[in-house]
Amino acid sequence: MPEVRNALAPAAVAQARPQLQIDKVFKRFGEGEGAVVAVDHVSFDVHPGEFVAVIGPSGCGKSTLFNIIGGLLDDYNGNVLVEGDRVAGPHPAIGMVFQEESTFPWRNVLDNVAFPLELMGLPKAIRTEQARHFIELVGLAGFEKRMPSELSGGMKQRVSIARTLVSKPHILLMDEPFAALDEQTRLLLGDKITQIQQELQQTTLLITHNLTEAVQLSDRIVVMTYRPGRVKRIVNIDLPRPRTSDVVSSDAFGHYVAEIWADLREEATRGMADTEQRTRGARGHG
Amino acid sequence: MAATGKIGDRPLTATTSWGAKGRVSIRATHAIRIGFVVAAATIWESVSRSGLLLHDVVPSLLAIFAAIGRLLINPAFYANLEVTAWEVAASLAIGGAAGVVVGIALGANRFLSRAYEPYVYYLAPTPRIIFFPVMIMWFGVGVASKIALGALSCFFTVALSTAAGMRGIDPVLIRVGRSFRATTWQMALKIYLPAMRAPVLNGVRLGFGTAVITALLAETRLSNHGLGSMVMQIYSHFDIPSLYGLLIVVFVLAGLGNVLLGKVTGDRG
Image (tube, each protein chain N blue to C red):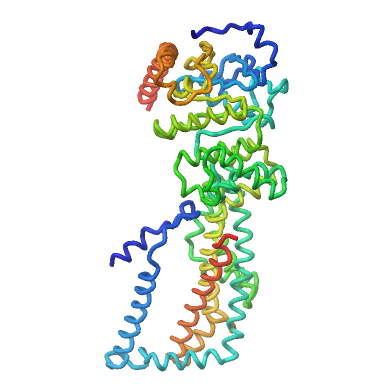
Protein backbone atom coordinates (compact mmCIF):
# COMPACT_ATOMS: atom_id res chain seq x y z
CA MET A 1 0.00 0.00 0.00
CA PRO A 2 1.23 3.60 0.25
CA GLU A 3 4.93 3.67 0.75
CA VAL A 4 7.45 6.35 1.44
CA ARG A 5 9.95 6.62 -1.35
CA ASN A 6 13.45 7.37 -0.26
CA ALA A 7 16.23 9.06 -2.15
CA LEU A 8 17.42 5.81 -3.71
CA ALA A 9 15.19 5.04 -6.65
CA PRO A 10 14.19 1.41 -7.16
CA ALA A 11 16.27 -0.37 -9.82
CA ALA A 12 13.37 -0.79 -12.25
CA VAL A 13 12.70 2.94 -12.29
CA ALA A 14 16.35 3.84 -12.56
CA GLN A 15 16.53 2.19 -15.98
CA ALA A 16 14.05 4.54 -17.56
CA ARG A 17 15.65 7.95 -17.25
CA PRO A 18 13.39 10.44 -15.51
CA GLN A 19 11.86 12.86 -17.98
CA LEU A 20 11.69 15.55 -15.35
CA GLN A 21 14.04 15.82 -12.39
CA ILE A 22 13.39 18.26 -9.60
CA ASP A 23 16.64 18.38 -7.69
CA LYS A 24 17.00 20.33 -4.43
CA VAL A 25 15.03 23.24 -5.78
CA PHE A 26 15.10 26.22 -3.44
CA LYS A 27 13.40 29.59 -3.76
CA ARG A 28 13.28 32.46 -1.31
CA PHE A 29 11.33 35.68 -1.79
CA GLY A 30 12.61 38.88 -0.24
CA GLU A 31 15.58 39.53 1.98
CA GLY A 32 16.27 39.79 5.70
CA GLU A 33 13.40 39.62 8.21
CA GLY A 34 10.57 39.60 5.73
CA ALA A 35 12.14 36.85 3.63
CA VAL A 36 9.91 33.88 2.92
CA VAL A 37 11.27 30.52 1.84
CA ALA A 38 8.63 29.32 -0.57
CA VAL A 39 10.29 26.15 -1.82
CA ASP A 40 12.90 24.41 0.34
CA HIS A 41 15.10 21.76 -1.26
CA VAL A 42 12.34 19.96 -3.07
CA SER A 43 13.40 16.87 -5.00
CA PHE A 44 11.41 14.30 -6.94
CA ASP A 45 11.40 12.70 -10.40
CA VAL A 46 8.73 12.21 -13.02
CA HIS A 47 9.19 9.30 -15.41
CA PRO A 48 7.97 9.00 -19.00
CA GLY A 49 4.24 8.38 -19.20
CA GLU A 50 3.77 8.92 -15.48
CA PHE A 51 1.08 11.06 -13.86
CA VAL A 52 2.40 12.77 -10.74
CA ALA A 53 0.47 15.18 -8.51
CA VAL A 54 2.00 17.69 -6.12
CA ILE A 55 -0.41 18.35 -3.28
CA GLY A 56 -0.22 20.69 -0.32
CA PRO A 57 -2.13 23.41 1.54
CA SER A 58 -2.20 27.00 0.25
CA GLY A 59 1.11 28.62 1.07
CA CYS A 60 3.20 25.49 0.51
CA GLY A 61 4.91 26.96 -2.54
CA LYS A 62 3.03 24.84 -5.09
CA SER A 63 2.50 27.72 -7.47
CA THR A 64 6.09 28.87 -7.07
CA LEU A 65 7.22 25.37 -7.99
CA PHE A 66 4.87 25.43 -10.98
CA ASN A 67 6.37 28.70 -12.19
CA ILE A 68 9.92 27.46 -11.68
CA ILE A 69 9.33 24.21 -13.57
CA GLY A 70 7.49 26.11 -16.30
CA GLY A 71 10.43 28.49 -16.63
CA LEU A 72 8.39 31.60 -15.80
CA LEU A 73 10.49 32.13 -12.66
CA ASP A 74 14.06 31.46 -13.66
CA ASP A 75 15.85 32.85 -10.62
CA TYR A 76 16.05 29.75 -8.39
CA ASN A 77 18.59 27.49 -6.72
CA GLY A 78 18.96 23.80 -7.41
CA ASN A 79 18.09 22.16 -10.70
CA VAL A 80 15.01 21.45 -12.71
CA LEU A 81 16.12 19.10 -15.46
CA VAL A 82 13.96 18.35 -18.46
CA GLU A 83 15.41 15.38 -20.28
CA GLY A 84 18.75 16.39 -18.80
CA ASP A 85 18.38 20.07 -19.73
CA ARG A 86 18.38 22.67 -16.91
CA VAL A 87 15.24 24.82 -17.10
CA ALA A 88 16.03 28.50 -17.57
CA GLY A 89 13.07 30.16 -19.24
CA PRO A 90 10.11 28.29 -20.73
CA HIS A 91 11.32 24.93 -22.04
CA PRO A 92 9.98 23.65 -25.37
CA ALA A 93 9.34 20.19 -23.90
CA ILE A 94 6.97 21.57 -21.25
CA GLY A 95 3.39 22.64 -21.89
CA MET A 96 1.63 24.66 -19.18
CA VAL A 97 -2.05 24.85 -18.26
CA PHE A 98 -2.92 27.66 -15.88
CA GLN A 99 -5.31 27.85 -12.98
CA GLU A 100 -6.90 31.06 -14.22
CA GLU A 101 -9.23 31.17 -17.16
CA SER A 102 -6.69 31.76 -19.91
CA THR A 103 -8.38 31.47 -23.30
CA PHE A 104 -7.95 34.46 -25.62
CA PRO A 105 -11.35 36.16 -25.57
CA TRP A 106 -10.89 37.57 -29.09
CA ARG A 107 -10.24 34.17 -30.69
CA ASN A 108 -12.76 31.42 -31.29
CA VAL A 109 -12.13 27.91 -30.00
CA LEU A 110 -10.35 26.76 -33.14
CA ASP A 111 -8.04 29.79 -33.26
CA ASN A 112 -7.38 29.55 -29.54
CA VAL A 113 -6.25 25.95 -29.86
CA ALA A 114 -4.25 26.69 -33.01
CA PHE A 115 -2.36 29.51 -31.25
CA PRO A 116 0.88 27.60 -30.49
CA LEU A 117 0.96 26.24 -34.05
CA GLU A 118 0.60 29.79 -35.33
CA LEU A 119 3.65 30.79 -33.29
CA MET A 120 5.55 27.91 -34.89
CA GLY A 121 4.65 29.30 -38.30
CA LEU A 122 2.82 26.21 -39.55
CA PRO A 123 0.58 26.59 -42.62
CA LYS A 124 -3.08 27.18 -41.96
CA ALA A 125 -4.34 23.84 -43.28
CA ILE A 126 -2.09 21.92 -40.91
CA ARG A 127 -2.95 24.20 -37.99
CA THR A 128 -6.65 23.66 -38.53
CA GLU A 129 -6.29 19.90 -38.89
CA GLN A 130 -4.22 19.50 -35.73
CA ALA A 131 -6.32 21.91 -33.71
CA ARG A 132 -9.48 20.04 -34.72
CA HIS A 133 -7.93 16.77 -33.62
CA PHE A 134 -7.24 18.06 -30.11
CA ILE A 135 -10.57 19.85 -29.86
CA GLU A 136 -12.16 16.50 -30.54
CA LEU A 137 -9.89 14.83 -28.00
CA VAL A 138 -11.09 17.13 -25.21
CA GLY A 139 -14.68 16.57 -26.31
CA LEU A 140 -15.44 19.96 -27.83
CA ALA A 141 -16.09 18.90 -31.44
CA GLY A 142 -18.78 21.15 -32.91
CA PHE A 143 -17.70 24.17 -30.83
CA GLU A 144 -14.83 25.22 -33.11
CA LYS A 145 -16.40 28.52 -34.15
CA ARG A 146 -17.70 29.48 -30.71
CA MET A 147 -16.16 32.35 -28.77
CA PRO A 148 -14.93 31.72 -25.20
CA SER A 149 -17.62 34.05 -23.86
CA GLU A 150 -20.19 31.52 -25.04
CA LEU A 151 -18.59 28.60 -23.18
CA SER A 152 -18.88 27.37 -19.59
CA GLY A 153 -15.90 27.42 -17.23
CA GLY A 154 -15.25 23.72 -17.72
CA MET A 155 -15.35 24.07 -21.51
CA LYS A 156 -12.96 27.01 -21.44
CA GLN A 157 -10.53 25.02 -19.33
CA ARG A 158 -10.74 22.17 -21.85
CA VAL A 159 -9.91 24.67 -24.61
CA SER A 160 -6.82 25.67 -22.62
CA ILE A 161 -5.84 22.04 -22.21
CA ALA A 162 -6.31 21.35 -25.93
CA ARG A 163 -4.27 24.47 -26.73
CA THR A 164 -1.40 23.16 -24.63
CA LEU A 165 -1.67 19.58 -25.94
CA VAL A 166 -1.60 20.73 -29.56
CA SER A 167 1.97 21.92 -29.03
CA LYS A 168 2.82 18.25 -28.27
CA PRO A 169 4.63 18.88 -25.00
CA HIS A 170 6.70 16.00 -23.65
CA ILE A 171 5.58 17.03 -20.19
CA LEU A 172 2.17 18.47 -19.42
CA LEU A 173 2.36 20.81 -16.43
CA MET A 174 -0.96 21.87 -14.89
CA ASP A 175 -1.62 24.26 -12.00
CA GLU A 176 -4.99 23.51 -10.41
CA PRO A 177 -6.74 23.57 -13.77
CA PHE A 178 -10.07 22.63 -12.21
CA ALA A 179 -9.90 24.85 -9.14
CA ALA A 180 -12.69 27.13 -10.31
CA LEU A 181 -15.06 24.32 -11.28
CA ASP A 182 -17.77 22.55 -9.33
CA GLU A 183 -17.17 19.05 -7.97
CA GLN A 184 -19.21 17.14 -10.59
CA THR A 185 -17.56 18.92 -13.51
CA ARG A 186 -14.23 18.35 -11.83
CA LEU A 187 -14.77 14.56 -11.58
CA LEU A 188 -15.94 14.30 -15.18
CA LEU A 189 -13.04 16.41 -16.44
CA GLY A 190 -10.81 14.13 -14.40
CA ASP A 191 -12.11 11.23 -16.49
CA LYS A 192 -11.29 13.17 -19.61
CA ILE A 193 -7.77 13.87 -18.37
CA THR A 194 -7.20 10.21 -17.46
CA GLN A 195 -8.47 9.13 -20.87
CA ILE A 196 -6.25 11.62 -22.68
CA GLN A 197 -3.26 10.75 -20.57
CA GLN A 198 -3.69 7.06 -21.34
CA GLU A 199 -4.31 7.68 -25.01
CA LEU A 200 -1.26 9.89 -25.48
CA GLN A 201 0.95 8.26 -22.84
CA GLN A 202 1.30 11.86 -21.68
CA THR A 203 3.80 12.53 -18.90
CA THR A 204 1.91 14.86 -16.58
CA LEU A 205 2.66 16.88 -13.47
CA LEU A 206 -0.42 18.25 -11.75
CA ILE A 207 -0.27 20.88 -9.01
CA THR A 208 -3.37 20.73 -6.83
CA HIS A 209 -4.80 21.18 -3.37
CA ASN A 210 -7.64 18.77 -4.09
CA LEU A 211 -7.09 15.40 -2.49
CA THR A 212 -9.69 13.34 -4.35
CA GLU A 213 -8.56 14.82 -7.64
CA ALA A 214 -4.94 13.90 -6.91
CA VAL A 215 -5.77 10.30 -5.95
CA GLN A 216 -8.21 9.87 -8.85
CA LEU A 217 -5.65 10.87 -11.46
CA SER A 218 -2.17 10.08 -10.21
CA ASP A 219 0.39 7.30 -10.24
CA ARG A 220 2.27 9.09 -7.50
CA ILE A 221 1.51 11.95 -5.16
CA VAL A 222 4.11 14.32 -3.73
CA VAL A 223 2.80 15.71 -0.42
CA MET A 224 4.24 19.12 0.47
CA THR A 225 4.60 20.75 3.89
CA TYR A 226 3.27 24.19 4.76
CA ARG A 227 5.84 27.01 4.63
CA PRO A 228 8.65 26.39 3.94
CA GLY A 229 7.49 24.05 1.19
CA ARG A 230 9.30 20.75 1.55
CA VAL A 231 8.48 17.25 0.37
CA LYS A 232 6.75 15.56 3.28
CA ARG A 233 6.38 12.21 1.57
CA ILE A 234 5.77 10.61 -1.78
CA VAL A 235 2.92 8.13 -2.07
CA ASN A 236 2.50 5.56 -4.86
CA ILE A 237 -1.11 5.14 -5.91
CA ASP A 238 -1.58 1.55 -6.97
CA LEU A 239 -5.11 1.85 -8.28
CA PRO A 240 -5.82 -0.13 -11.46
CA ARG A 241 -5.66 1.53 -14.86
CA PRO A 242 -7.54 2.34 -17.02
CA ARG A 243 -9.37 4.34 -14.37
CA THR A 244 -12.60 6.27 -14.38
CA SER A 245 -14.20 8.47 -11.76
CA ASP A 246 -15.92 5.30 -10.47
CA VAL A 247 -12.69 4.67 -8.64
CA VAL A 248 -13.67 7.25 -6.02
CA SER A 249 -16.15 4.78 -4.52
CA SER A 250 -13.61 1.96 -4.06
CA ASP A 251 -12.19 0.99 -0.68
CA ALA A 252 -8.63 1.41 -1.86
CA PHE A 253 -9.40 4.98 -2.94
CA GLY A 254 -10.81 5.79 0.49
CA HIS A 255 -7.77 4.29 2.09
CA TYR A 256 -5.39 6.49 0.07
CA VAL A 257 -7.42 9.60 0.75
CA ALA A 258 -7.46 8.91 4.49
CA GLU A 259 -3.75 8.15 4.48
CA ILE A 260 -2.76 11.34 2.70
CA TRP A 261 -5.27 13.46 4.56
CA ALA A 262 -3.60 12.52 7.85
CA ASP A 263 -0.43 14.18 6.55
CA LEU A 264 -2.16 17.00 4.83
CA ARG A 265 -4.30 17.91 7.82
CA GLU A 266 -1.24 18.52 9.92
CA GLU A 267 0.13 20.94 7.31
CA ALA A 268 -3.17 22.64 6.61
CA THR A 269 -3.69 23.18 10.35
CA ARG A 270 -0.27 24.78 10.64
CA GLY A 271 -1.08 26.94 7.65
CA MET A 272 -4.36 28.11 9.11
CA ALA A 273 -2.84 28.93 12.49
CA ASP A 274 -0.03 30.83 10.82
CA THR A 275 -2.41 32.86 8.68
CA GLU A 276 -4.53 33.75 11.70
CA GLN A 277 -1.51 34.83 13.64
CA ARG A 278 -0.22 37.00 10.85
CA THR A 279 -3.62 38.58 10.37
CA ARG A 280 -3.73 39.39 14.07
CA GLY A 281 -0.19 40.77 13.92
CA ALA A 282 -1.02 42.95 10.96
CA ARG A 283 -4.00 44.39 12.80
CA GLY A 284 -1.88 45.08 15.88
CA HIS A 285 0.51 47.10 13.77
CA GLY A 286 -2.25 48.92 11.94
CA MET B 1 -40.63 51.91 -21.83
CA ALA B 2 -39.68 48.28 -21.42
CA ALA B 3 -37.53 48.62 -24.49
CA THR B 4 -35.54 51.53 -23.08
CA GLY B 5 -34.76 49.42 -20.04
CA LYS B 6 -33.26 46.83 -22.33
CA ILE B 7 -30.91 49.30 -23.95
CA GLY B 8 -29.19 49.76 -20.63
CA ASP B 9 -28.61 46.01 -20.37
CA ARG B 10 -26.61 45.88 -23.55
CA PRO B 11 -23.01 44.99 -22.76
CA LEU B 12 -21.03 48.16 -23.22
CA THR B 13 -17.68 47.12 -21.83
CA ALA B 14 -15.05 45.92 -24.22
CA THR B 15 -14.52 42.58 -22.54
CA THR B 16 -18.09 41.45 -22.73
CA SER B 17 -18.66 42.55 -26.30
CA TRP B 18 -16.46 39.82 -27.77
CA GLY B 19 -18.79 37.53 -29.57
CA ALA B 20 -21.58 38.20 -27.12
CA LYS B 21 -24.94 37.73 -28.75
CA GLY B 22 -26.84 40.13 -26.51
CA ARG B 23 -29.04 41.47 -29.28
CA VAL B 24 -31.66 43.87 -28.07
CA SER B 25 -34.79 44.10 -30.15
CA ILE B 26 -33.36 46.57 -32.62
CA ARG B 27 -36.72 47.40 -34.10
CA ALA B 28 -38.02 48.73 -30.78
CA THR B 29 -34.93 50.90 -30.35
CA HIS B 30 -35.31 52.32 -33.83
CA ALA B 31 -39.01 52.98 -33.31
CA ILE B 32 -38.24 54.99 -30.18
CA ARG B 33 -35.53 56.99 -31.92
CA ILE B 34 -37.76 57.85 -34.86
CA GLY B 35 -40.59 58.63 -32.48
CA PHE B 36 -38.33 61.09 -30.65
CA VAL B 37 -37.41 62.93 -33.87
CA VAL B 38 -41.04 63.09 -35.00
CA ALA B 39 -42.15 64.40 -31.61
CA ALA B 40 -39.39 67.02 -31.50
CA ALA B 41 -40.22 68.15 -35.04
CA THR B 42 -43.93 68.39 -34.20
CA ILE B 43 -43.32 70.49 -31.10
CA TRP B 44 -40.87 72.72 -32.98
CA GLU B 45 -43.27 73.30 -35.83
CA SER B 46 -46.25 74.02 -33.57
CA VAL B 47 -44.24 76.49 -31.51
CA SER B 48 -43.06 78.12 -34.71
CA ARG B 49 -46.60 78.45 -36.09
CA SER B 50 -48.20 79.51 -32.80
CA GLY B 51 -46.13 82.70 -32.77
CA LEU B 52 -45.42 82.28 -29.05
CA LEU B 53 -41.79 82.98 -29.72
CA LEU B 54 -40.30 85.32 -32.28
CA HIS B 55 -40.69 83.87 -35.70
CA ASP B 56 -37.05 84.59 -36.47
CA VAL B 57 -35.84 82.63 -33.46
CA VAL B 58 -37.93 79.54 -34.15
CA PRO B 59 -38.29 79.41 -37.94
CA SER B 60 -40.53 76.90 -39.64
CA LEU B 61 -39.02 73.54 -40.49
CA LEU B 62 -39.77 74.19 -44.13
CA ALA B 63 -37.60 77.29 -44.03
CA ILE B 64 -34.84 75.32 -42.34
CA PHE B 65 -34.99 72.54 -44.91
CA ALA B 66 -34.95 75.08 -47.72
CA ALA B 67 -31.84 76.58 -46.09
CA ILE B 68 -30.22 73.14 -45.90
CA GLY B 69 -30.95 72.71 -49.62
CA ARG B 70 -29.30 76.04 -50.40
CA LEU B 71 -26.37 75.13 -48.19
CA LEU B 72 -25.78 71.80 -49.89
CA ILE B 73 -25.44 73.46 -53.31
CA ASN B 74 -23.26 76.25 -51.99
CA PRO B 75 -19.58 75.75 -52.97
CA ALA B 76 -18.49 77.79 -49.92
CA PHE B 77 -19.96 75.11 -47.66
CA TYR B 78 -17.80 72.42 -49.25
CA ALA B 79 -14.71 74.60 -49.04
CA ASN B 80 -15.34 75.13 -45.33
CA LEU B 81 -16.17 71.46 -44.80
CA GLU B 82 -12.89 70.51 -46.40
CA VAL B 83 -10.94 72.79 -44.08
CA THR B 84 -12.67 71.42 -40.97
CA ALA B 85 -12.37 67.81 -42.09
CA TRP B 86 -8.68 68.31 -42.73
CA GLU B 87 -8.23 69.87 -39.30
CA VAL B 88 -10.05 67.02 -37.58
CA ALA B 89 -8.21 64.32 -39.53
CA ALA B 90 -4.81 65.87 -38.90
CA SER B 91 -5.58 66.43 -35.18
CA LEU B 92 -6.70 62.85 -34.79
CA ALA B 93 -3.69 61.48 -36.65
CA ILE B 94 -1.15 63.51 -34.68
CA GLY B 95 -2.83 63.48 -31.28
CA GLY B 96 -4.02 59.89 -31.65
CA ALA B 97 -0.62 58.52 -32.64
CA ALA B 98 1.13 60.40 -29.84
CA GLY B 99 -1.60 59.31 -27.43
CA VAL B 100 -1.21 55.63 -28.31
CA VAL B 101 2.58 55.79 -27.92
CA VAL B 102 2.46 57.65 -24.61
CA GLY B 103 -0.43 55.50 -23.39
CA ILE B 104 1.52 52.31 -24.08
CA ALA B 105 4.56 53.72 -22.27
CA LEU B 106 2.45 54.75 -19.27
CA GLY B 107 0.59 51.46 -19.23
CA ALA B 108 3.68 49.31 -19.56
CA ASN B 109 5.95 51.10 -17.14
CA ARG B 110 4.77 51.48 -13.58
CA PHE B 111 7.50 53.99 -12.77
CA LEU B 112 6.63 56.23 -15.71
CA SER B 113 2.95 56.04 -14.94
CA ARG B 114 3.46 56.97 -11.30
CA ALA B 115 5.69 59.87 -12.32
CA TYR B 116 3.67 61.33 -15.18
CA GLU B 117 0.12 60.18 -14.96
CA PRO B 118 -0.97 62.85 -12.45
CA TYR B 119 -0.10 65.48 -15.09
CA VAL B 120 -2.22 63.71 -17.65
CA TYR B 121 -5.12 63.43 -15.24
CA TYR B 122 -4.91 67.08 -14.18
CA LEU B 123 -4.55 68.37 -17.72
CA ALA B 124 -7.15 66.10 -19.29
CA PRO B 125 -10.23 67.90 -17.93
CA THR B 126 -8.81 71.40 -18.54
CA PRO B 127 -10.76 73.08 -21.34
CA ARG B 128 -8.26 73.07 -24.19
CA ILE B 129 -9.65 76.25 -25.69
CA ILE B 130 -7.70 78.24 -23.08
CA PHE B 131 -4.52 77.09 -24.83
CA PHE B 132 -5.78 78.53 -28.10
CA PRO B 133 -4.03 81.91 -27.73
CA VAL B 134 -0.77 80.06 -27.09
CA MET B 135 -1.31 77.94 -30.17
CA ILE B 136 -2.01 81.04 -32.24
CA MET B 137 1.28 82.54 -31.07
CA TRP B 138 3.14 79.35 -31.91
CA PHE B 139 1.40 78.26 -35.09
CA GLY B 140 -0.28 81.37 -36.48
CA VAL B 141 -3.94 82.15 -37.10
CA GLY B 142 -4.36 79.61 -39.89
CA VAL B 143 -5.22 75.95 -39.97
CA ALA B 144 -2.05 74.90 -38.09
CA SER B 145 -3.10 76.38 -34.74
CA LYS B 146 -6.45 74.56 -34.91
CA ILE B 147 -4.73 71.30 -35.73
CA ALA B 148 -2.33 71.81 -32.83
CA LEU B 149 -5.19 72.47 -30.43
CA GLY B 150 -7.18 69.50 -31.76
CA ALA B 151 -4.17 67.21 -31.49
CA LEU B 152 -3.61 68.38 -27.92
CA SER B 153 -7.23 67.60 -27.12
CA CYS B 154 -7.40 64.08 -28.47
CA PHE B 155 -3.94 63.24 -27.17
CA PHE B 156 -5.21 63.09 -23.59
CA THR B 157 -8.30 61.07 -24.38
CA VAL B 158 -6.38 58.50 -26.42
CA ALA B 159 -3.42 58.33 -24.01
CA LEU B 160 -5.61 57.69 -20.98
CA SER B 161 -7.71 54.99 -22.59
CA THR B 162 -4.64 53.31 -24.10
CA ALA B 163 -2.88 53.28 -20.73
CA ALA B 164 -6.00 51.83 -19.11
CA GLY B 165 -6.23 49.23 -21.87
CA MET B 166 -2.61 48.27 -21.44
CA ARG B 167 -3.05 47.82 -17.71
CA GLY B 168 -6.31 45.98 -18.22
CA ILE B 169 -4.66 43.11 -20.06
CA ASP B 170 -5.22 39.90 -18.15
CA PRO B 171 -1.72 38.94 -16.89
CA VAL B 172 -2.42 35.25 -17.39
CA LEU B 173 -2.64 35.81 -21.15
CA ILE B 174 0.88 37.19 -21.08
CA ARG B 175 2.04 34.15 -19.13
CA VAL B 176 0.36 31.92 -21.72
CA GLY B 177 2.29 33.69 -24.47
CA ARG B 178 5.55 33.32 -22.57
CA SER B 179 4.90 29.64 -21.82
CA PHE B 180 4.55 29.02 -25.56
CA ARG B 181 7.81 30.92 -26.03
CA ALA B 182 6.32 33.67 -28.17
CA THR B 183 8.88 36.17 -29.44
CA THR B 184 8.58 39.83 -28.44
CA TRP B 185 7.15 40.57 -31.85
CA GLN B 186 4.60 37.75 -31.56
CA MET B 187 3.65 38.92 -28.07
CA ALA B 188 2.99 42.42 -29.42
CA LEU B 189 1.03 41.30 -32.48
CA LYS B 190 -0.90 38.35 -31.11
CA ILE B 191 -1.50 39.26 -27.49
CA TYR B 192 -0.99 42.93 -26.61
CA LEU B 193 -2.50 44.37 -29.77
CA PRO B 194 -5.70 42.31 -29.87
CA ALA B 195 -6.14 42.59 -26.11
CA MET B 196 -5.88 46.38 -26.27
CA ARG B 197 -7.82 46.81 -29.47
CA ALA B 198 -11.17 47.62 -27.89
CA PRO B 199 -10.02 50.24 -25.35
CA VAL B 200 -7.68 51.92 -27.85
CA LEU B 201 -10.34 52.15 -30.55
CA ASN B 202 -12.78 53.43 -27.98
CA GLY B 203 -10.23 56.10 -27.11
CA VAL B 204 -9.80 56.99 -30.77
CA ARG B 205 -13.56 57.37 -31.17
CA LEU B 206 -13.75 59.60 -28.13
CA GLY B 207 -10.71 61.45 -29.47
CA PHE B 208 -12.55 62.03 -32.74
CA GLY B 209 -15.38 63.66 -30.83
CA THR B 210 -12.95 65.86 -28.94
CA ALA B 211 -11.16 66.82 -32.16
CA VAL B 212 -14.43 67.86 -33.83
CA ILE B 213 -15.47 69.93 -30.82
CA THR B 214 -12.09 71.61 -30.56
CA ALA B 215 -11.78 72.35 -34.26
CA LEU B 216 -15.23 73.90 -34.48
CA LEU B 217 -14.81 75.82 -31.26
CA ALA B 218 -11.46 77.21 -32.36
CA GLU B 219 -12.94 78.18 -35.74
CA THR B 220 -15.72 80.15 -34.10
CA ARG B 221 -13.09 82.10 -32.16
CA LEU B 222 -10.66 83.14 -34.84
CA SER B 223 -10.88 81.96 -38.40
CA ASN B 224 -12.07 82.77 -41.89
CA HIS B 225 -12.42 79.14 -42.89
CA GLY B 226 -14.11 76.04 -41.63
CA LEU B 227 -17.63 75.17 -40.54
CA GLY B 228 -17.19 76.90 -37.17
CA SER B 229 -16.41 80.23 -38.82
CA MET B 230 -19.28 79.67 -41.26
CA VAL B 231 -21.65 79.32 -38.29
CA MET B 232 -20.44 82.67 -36.96
CA GLN B 233 -20.72 84.34 -40.38
CA ILE B 234 -24.29 83.16 -40.82
CA TYR B 235 -25.11 84.26 -37.30
CA SER B 236 -23.69 87.73 -37.97
CA HIS B 237 -26.11 88.03 -40.92
CA PHE B 238 -28.90 86.84 -38.67
CA ASP B 239 -29.88 84.24 -41.26
CA ILE B 240 -31.51 82.01 -38.63
CA PRO B 241 -32.92 79.24 -40.89
CA SER B 242 -29.45 78.81 -42.44
CA LEU B 243 -27.92 78.78 -38.96
CA TYR B 244 -30.17 75.94 -37.84
CA GLY B 245 -29.66 74.20 -41.16
CA LEU B 246 -25.90 74.32 -40.79
CA LEU B 247 -26.10 73.09 -37.21
CA ILE B 248 -28.21 70.13 -38.32
CA VAL B 249 -25.77 69.37 -41.12
CA VAL B 250 -22.80 69.56 -38.75
CA PHE B 251 -24.62 67.33 -36.27
CA VAL B 252 -25.37 64.75 -38.95
CA LEU B 253 -21.80 64.89 -40.29
CA ALA B 254 -20.28 64.38 -36.85
CA GLY B 255 -22.64 61.48 -36.25
CA LEU B 256 -21.78 59.95 -39.62
CA GLY B 257 -18.08 60.37 -38.92
CA ASN B 258 -18.51 58.55 -35.62
CA VAL B 259 -20.50 55.74 -37.22
CA LEU B 260 -17.97 55.46 -40.02
CA LEU B 261 -15.11 55.28 -37.54
CA GLY B 262 -17.02 52.61 -35.64
CA LYS B 263 -17.57 50.63 -38.84
CA VAL B 264 -13.95 50.86 -39.92
CA THR B 265 -12.59 49.91 -36.52
CA GLY B 266 -15.37 48.07 -34.77
CA ASP B 267 -16.14 45.14 -37.04
CA ARG B 268 -13.58 42.43 -37.01
CA GLY B 269 -12.59 40.79 -40.26
